[in-house]
Image: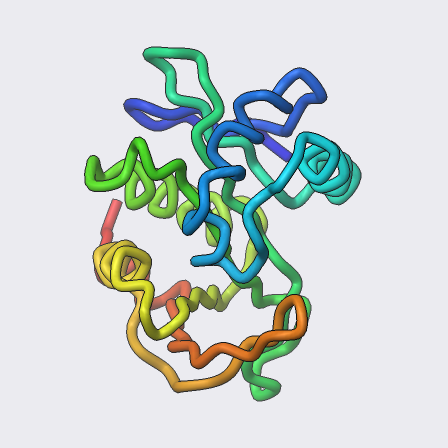
Length: 180
């Protein structure tokens, strides 16, 4: 994937050398549970997931420029939320951020850059984003990024089912909200 830049972040492909930064935030209880996977109980779990990130090519490492440190991830997932849209023109954005960096607007900054990239360069027409019903931090990022509520749903992960809220952003809506 193309490296993306914001004022404070570099979004780039994952590297094997990112393992310790990744483990540092993913091992904190409560962080990864917001996304649907358990926190990393040991470095071997991190190693396995990092390999998946590298192999898939759909996950960005979020690097805080001032510290040259990986503090989260953002990915474009091939998921079809609504079959009235062609599957090849829709993606779902998923993300996670180290708890140490919450409340600074960093994820909103990353998501907005990712949205622009998805619409202008990947050429998708529809983006989806969702959050577990209790994840109010993610809800705030989604709404500040221009998505609008679409529907309630469920999400199954690691033998658990969660109530979720799904949001949509079309290319046309994006260009009306954030004209160039």
